[in-house]
Amino acid sequence: MKITTCLFEAGIKCLTKCFLRSIGEQGAGNAYADWVKTKSDSYRRAGIKRLIAGAVYDECISGLAATENLKTAKWRLAVDVKAHARNLESNIHAVERIQSHKSRQASDIIPIRFTFRNKLTIGDKMLLSFDALVLSEMLGREISLGRIIHGDTHTTLLRVLCP
Image (cartoon, rainbow, N blue to C red):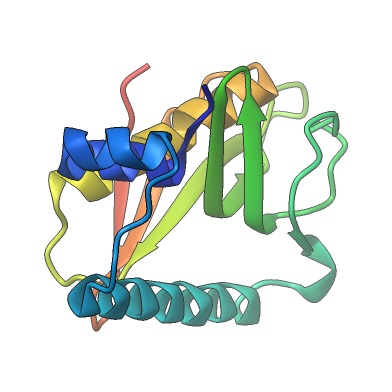
């Protein structure tokens, strides 16, 4: 069975919901859940536009190739990254690549997640850790930092992730 971001998020909230989603059951007409999904998608799209506006155009890509050599990569920001590793799959909102000052050292890779809530939940932090885990497995290297951009004022939390 493939563990996806959607399944992982459902598991954080309710194990029964996670089980039902894993066997293909769909929820029936929850107006609040629909509103939250719409609000989350809208906030994520607006956040990605803000990130792209602050980046140099030719240093921005959509998606990320698993076989790409990160030492010679030219991109600094990848958006809507679908990461796969073994039985894990994550839809990462954005990935930032920060070039190391030392030429032989690998650049830092930072997954970025957006949430419209002003107050972060443990679930938001766990989803960021899941993104980092899948990205780490896909790239074959440790991801030690992650960022969550949240709330009305687009507050940024830089989080040190456990190895």
